[in-house]
Image (cartoon, rainbow, N blue to C red; front, top):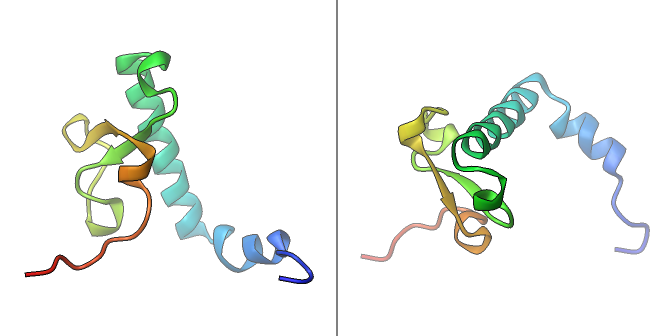
Length: 82
């Protein structure tokens, strides 16, 4: 990429949309809730995992949140091979 990434345009185009701001706020609230419950040391270097993803109708209830490793939680869903 010769000119680099235009973060301002990316924010304007995607991350600044009201729906995306709401999703980000929900993810931040989930991490805060888990940190409050388990302590800062328990979530250091880890991700807060939604068992049922927010994009599939999941929420921030205690039963839907878990601590998981970064490698396991990040990426996109792939269809499982039969």
